[in-house]
Image 1 (cartoon, rainbow, N blue to C red):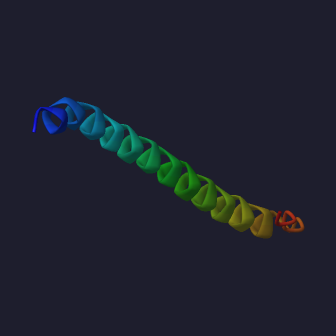
Image 2 (spheres, rainbow, N blue to C red; image 1 turned 180 degrees about the horizontal axis):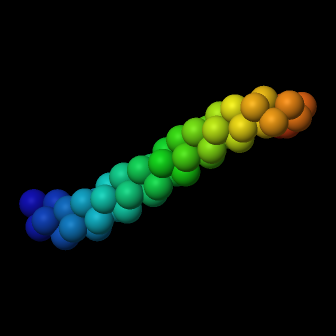
Length: 54
């Protein structure tokens, strides 16, 4: 029982760290996608060719 109480803080901090990193990566991915959509719209308005997708 003592081992469980010893590991609980480490596990909780690990889960919190994983959650924060996951949220940061998802936000970055979403921001890049939205930025690409905006850039494509602006390039289309200006009559320029669309950027190649990776």
